[in-house]
Image 1: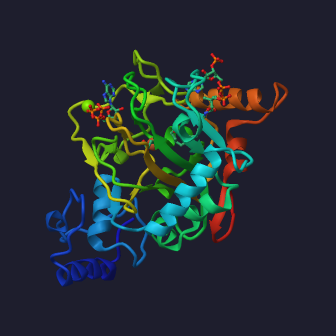
Image 2: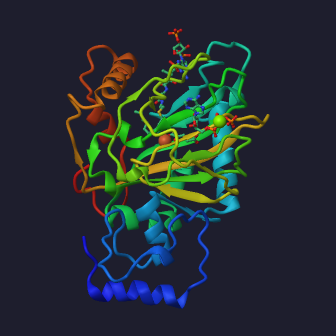
Length: 335
Ligand SMILES: CCCCCCCCCC(=O)SCCNC(=O)CCNC(=O)[C@H](O)C(C)(C)COP(=O)(O)OP(=O)(O)OC[C@H]1O[C@@H](n2cnc3c(N)ncnc32)[C@H](O)[C@@H]1OP(=O)(O)O
Ligand SMILES: Nc1ncnc2c1ncn2[C@@H]1O[C@H](COP(=O)(O)OP(=O)(O)OP(=O)(O)O)[C@@H](O)[C@H]1O
Ligand SMILES: O=C(O)CCC(=O)C(=O)O
Ligand SMILES: [Fe+2]
Ligand SMILES: [Mg+2]
């Protein structure tokens, strides 16, 4: 999609107006871009929300980090609700409470300390507020367009590593889990609920890998065990630059579903918390994953559905997403 001449000029002029705009974690600065050729934007849409620098950075790197996007007050409310769920004060339909594989069989670990991840909190009004925050949707629209579905929700509570390295999340692409396209109209918002650094297992990204294709994902061969459905990519370039995304409470990263990322071990005593939502354009279409690299995850999800709902269930991988998805802006046109 080539930018029209006027748009291109706007980009250049905007840049000249703000030559010293400093974007955190930008690997492509506007200075490196030649304006003598039309700039083709593939991963972002025309809105007035992203600065030219932010837009170019997402195009080049597959992610942008927005400082201080979610208020301390909101994060504290999400944290309180998380505690209520862990102590079983509230029961939310559809919500999955996942324990770390290395403590899953322990009878001694209770409450919040046993929980590594909440998944599918779309029926919890308090946590789901995160997905509807206007300041997040404003950015999300730059990638999805105006019809926005919240497809997948998580609150990650990365536990102190037990010594088995199971607190790691292997390098992966989130698109592996999604039977809908186009990928460029999907985006993840991931917000730090506290200071997150390499010590407590921050996100690690391989900038630019969103330009590649979906890779094969399998369980990594890790001695200490791997959490359920934590598939990883084996075939990535080990020399590709890795960026550790250190973030403050409230900082939010928006990233493309093909961006290769993971998170390291939590070396601290605290439970490192983040909240996230994967959004997609409601205009996306479901695809058949049969015969593709996604067949393994689709079978695993369908098997889990049968375990939960009974062996006669005919729920497909796609169906599970139809049930999870919630409209947060515009019209539910397709998904
Ligand atoms: C559709 C996926 C959507 C993801 C899309 C976005 C990208 C996100 C990338 C990811 O996060 S991928 C990881 C997503 N993970 C999941 O969706 C897993 C969801 N978790 C579950 O379904 C349950 O927590 C689980 C089946 C693992 C445990 O269920 P239960 O609550 O029934 O636990 P229970 O204590 O009864 O244990 C049942 C068995 O599971 C084992 N188990 C428990 N927690 C485990 C764990 N974390 N990993 C592996 N196995 C686990 C447990 O040891 C036991 O084994 P045995 O049958 O041998 O006794
Ligand atoms: N040996 C490994 N094989 C495959 N993936 C790994 C391996 N070690 C780390 N990773 C993955 O690489 C990413 C970055 O990990 P990172 O180096 O930040 O942490 P770590 O290796 O777990 O711990 P440390 O903080 O000690 O380096 C994570 O997604 C992690 O799961
Ligand atoms: O470690 C995290 O917080 C993020 C893990 C992740 O990438 C995911 O669940 O898809
Ligand atoms: Fe992920
Ligand atoms: Mg390491």
